[in-house]
Length: 108
Image 1 (cartoon, rainbow, N blue to C red):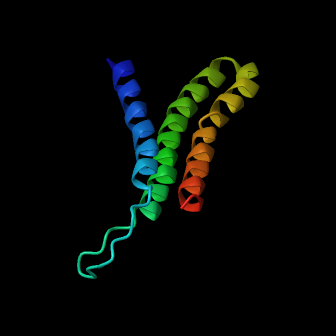
Image 2 (image 1 turned 90 degrees about the vertical axis):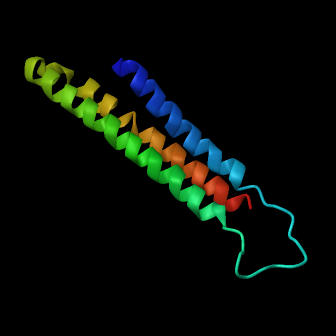
């Protein structure tokens, strides 16, 4: 059951990182602009979501890995190098979220 929730969580995070790119597409400007109902600029919002949600997911993953690493190192201290590598892997998700945010902001 926990594995299914984990897969669903990361699936939703992935969709939330990809969906802003769809909303970031520019629309054709109209000749008459109503200032009271001007359209929302989705680019900064989607860039913030790309970085923010990937940071939250990475922090959550690192907390789980850190707890498991502490337990494993208490029994086998020689696993320290492996645990450092495993702790660094979720950081790549933040880097990818940052790249997606840059692409959203630069491509328009």
